[in-house]
Image (cartoon, rainbow, N blue to C red; front, side, top):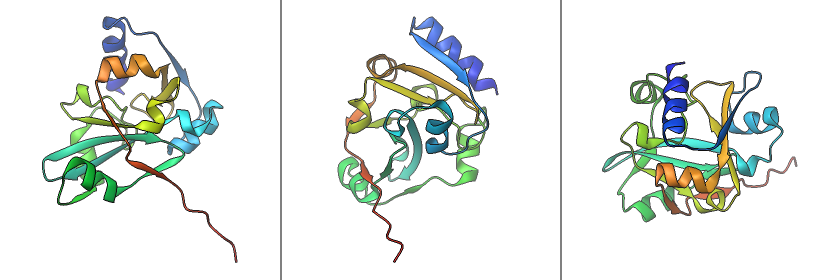
Length: 162
């Protein structure tokens, strides 16, 4: 899609070191981690939330979930909800639905990076499609995007089959 070109131009003009890989179709961040042979803690899941002040981009590891109570408390919102598919399509018209990169700065949207992902040495994320992935040093990502680093994610609850 068009975003991949724009993203690569942005990264190149910023003199960022990154690699671009292509894998078979993968819709979820966990599927991307599997396709890329990466630990899920290094793959960014981009979640768009609508709250009192508009849209917010929350970036968590594929291995974790957004804690909406924590989002409301930390961001000082009275309410927060996932953006709808229709809203996502309007906000990111140059991306496949659900494949937006965690680059809110390209869309005028604040970015909140979960502290557990910020602690990883590298980060991988969708490049606007369900098969393109950008890999880079997390420190370089932070210099380019200027996210607010806070704790907004939780581990998945254990499921018992009994």
